[in-house]
Length: 406
Image (cartoon, rainbow, N blue to C red; front, side, top):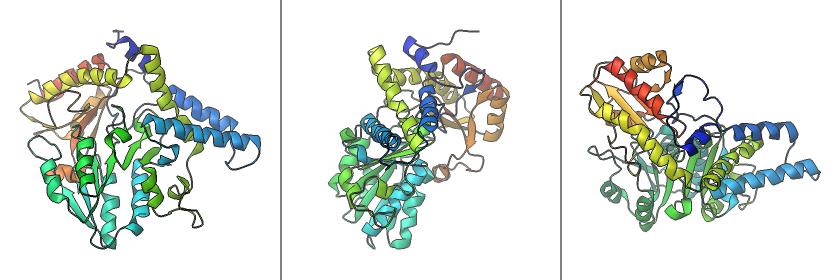
């Protein structure tokens, strides 16, 4: 078998994951990544040794509580949160966004405004649109059709004294473009409003720093960052204290994060998720380099030949920039053929043991805005750092057979 084309550190990283031993190449990572072995081991060990509830005065319950606190501390440090209680767990990023919208509702008045984008996954649209039932005005921030970016000029036009919250993705799950979170946040704060950032597509590929960016809320899906199927939400502590209790009615205003986590968190999954920062910390210690810088370089090399193939193909419409520059885009690549249905392309790739998906990926409004029928949608190819140049070579070769070479 041909040796995988990876740098030494990335070869070691590939061994950390379960399920990569088959002859399939997986390019559906934006939908859900493969799981770290250490995460699986932590979840299993927790379930075998600590099948208890927190809050007891017996040693096993106290040990379980200590582990939960440690998991929150490690994940808070992973995104550079100031306090462990700024971390909330939920079933998914969608569930957490709905929880936040519910907790915000009593604080919003008739005529208050929320800004959402046309490019976002529906998880960062539907909860805010629901607030229209209570007199909130929801305004739409459109992208620039020329470069697929969120227009800062259009944002400035939307902001006014009634704006309370601006919700946007750090990276669209179809366009792959990295948005300037820090600059957007600066402008929103200057207008007296707050920001909610969907980092689901971004967080598996680059380092998250909520304090450097000064964001108020940041949500991500840990099962797309090589962890268990659980979502994580960061919120600034002073703002979380203001929010309404959506859990048991007797909880105090400072009962963080419990007042915002109906039913509590999944203990075993939270403990397992702490294996994610452990993985990156060990990588950094053992290699002496920043793992996210290595990932950015590697993923750009993976994206380059595919983007070049698609950009050169007259019958293909590529969503987003054809530039693989890791400062510009992430390795999330969506395209549509002029005559071949996206479903057929995905099926033909599956016949060659190449796993991609097609559809609207819950970004229907973006596809409609761009004039793409959402029912058949687009083909999406999304890489993770455990993908290899050999796998991409197989993919590009297969697309040449299916679409014809440009």
